[in-house]
Length: 302
Image (cartoon, rainbow, N blue to C red; front, side, top):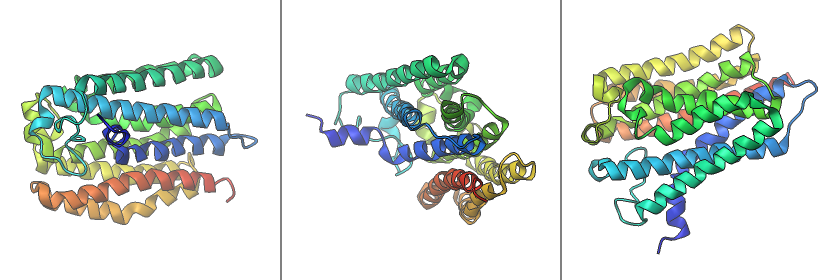
């Protein structure tokens, strides 16, 4: 019989850390722009729960669909790619995993309905796109290189960040739209790099993503471009006075970015040597939005 621990591991908890750091960016812009400063605790908790359930749903459904397609039976797992390994090991029943993912997605829908009732229909487009991305990411979006590349960043950037901001402010602003691109760039880059070790298994499963299409050397250059774009975007938003100068705190991860770029460019074709830099990239993806959000909040008092 499956244990609670097994179900917990099926959610891929290490990846769920993306949720609080992306939520923080949206909350920070809403609080920074509110006059007087305000913070709705109940809305924050519900927004956080909704984003968490959405992330669990996409992780779980990805595991289910990759198991059904045979991808997870062929892939060589790393700490950052290749699925949870729980279904190939026979630790859970596939149909129950599928239902778990669907129930998590239904929870997201229910929270979305609540916010529509409280704040109006303007949040509906985010919710609809989010549900579609979560459910169809593995089965459809991974078959198209462009959609596969932008979907992760769209989910954790504009969708989560703008959604969190809207649940506090009841509106969208230029500042949150610009800030949302930072986790957007980084999360798309995270998925791009994590695809490197899975190329052969993904080919067998009829996926078509950038590393399959262009190879790892060209993909490493695309990865580098995303890193450059992230830091250039932070500088741009501050230069245009869209975000406070304290948002430059997000630049503090630049040494990690340089280390990740050098490691990826040098070891793109050697999965074993690439794994440590996949770890560096994960830290970069978590810390940059975290520091950006903290920096925006510091702007309230400086």
